[in-house]
Image (tube, rainbow, N blue to C red; front, top):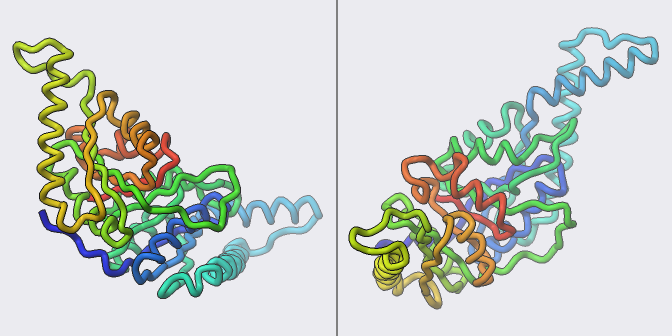
Length: 314
C-alpha cells in the first residue's frame, strides 16, 4: 500500500462574497498549519450577475425618468465595477491569511462558476478545491450548493467540503485529530487511502477505517439474515484489518476499524459523530455501485447531513 507524502498543498478556494462561503477558510488555516500551503482565492462572476445588475440599473433609471443608454457599453462598465469590487473583496480576505499560509493569490474571472473552478484547478496542477457546501445566493452571489455538486461532477481533483451554516464562523481553525475513511472493498474507494494517510501523518492524527454493512445486503446462502449480517461484518473487519496492517508504517499515530450496520450515508454520518471525527474521507466513485458517489448518492448525502468536513477523492 503506497502512501502519498503530503509535503505541501495548493488549495483553490472559491468565494462568492458571502459569510457562508467564507466558512471554508478555517479549515484552510488548519491545513496551512501542517504543511507549507499556497492558497488561490477565486471569485467567479457569472454572466447572469452582469445581466441582472444592468437590468436593475435600467429599472432604477426608468423610475427616475432617465434611460440607460448603450446597453453594451453599460455592461462593460458594470463588469469593470464588479471586477473592482471582487478584487477588493479578495484582497481583504487574502490579508487575513497573510502570515498563516506560504503564499496567497487572488483571481477574478467571468464565466460559469463550476466550469471556471474546474478549469483553474486543472491549471494549478496538483491542487485541492476547498469549498463550503452552500452559500447565500443573490444579486451578486452564486449558490454554492448547486456549484459544489457540479464541481464534483466535473473535476478529478480532491474536493474538501466544509459545511456552511447560518452560525457566525469562529476565527479558530478546526482540529484535525481523527480522520475517518469510508471504504467498501472496491479499488475506487481505496484510492482515497494515500491522501488520507498523508494527511494523518502530517497532522499526527488517528485514522478510522470504516465499512458499512447495509441491512439489505445480498444474503449469504444457507444463512439467515442476522447470521448473514454477522458474517459480512466478519469479512469487512478482515478486509479493513488487512488494509490497516499495510498502512500502519506511515499513516499516523493509530489506525482502528469499524463496521456499523445500516444505510451507508446515514451510518457514515452517525459513526463520525459517535467517534468524534474531524474529517471524513470518501471516494468520488464506489460506495454506491456503478453510479458516481456524488450523483444523488453517498458523498452528496453525507455532505448534506454531516457538520464534519468531507474530503472527496478519486
